[in-house]
Length: 130
Figure 1 (cartoon, rainbow, N blue to C red):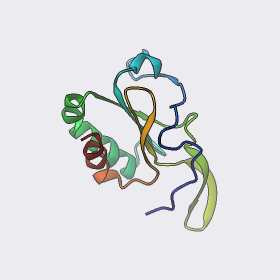
Figure 2: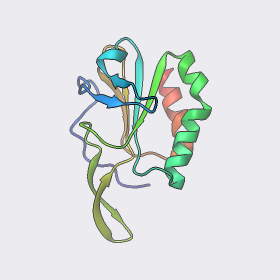
Figure 3: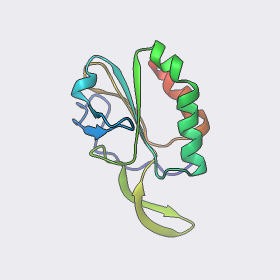
Figure 4: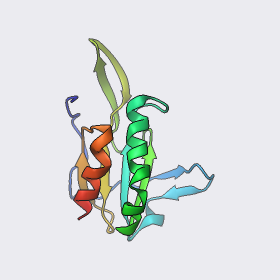
């Protein structure tokens, strides 16, 4: 598994506000999701095997997340520190880290997964929701 990046956000910190377009064209904001568990997962690149596996795992468990009152958002990059130096086969480059944040209903960071195994990740997040 990749080395975890150093993150500016810590468990217990207020979640940074965000505003992002969704696939249906509406704008999603953290303030608009107040009172819900928000699972905000970052992925490096669309249509790659790891990212597809992770997204499919969340899709497959979607009804279980909904039953726990959670909203799932998959994004490529924003103010959550998911961008930085990465290394692959000895080559260093700038890219998106595969990180997930659980924002509790009060808008605080409840959990952070700084390294992720795509296939098993949705189950980890579900377990953390209790």
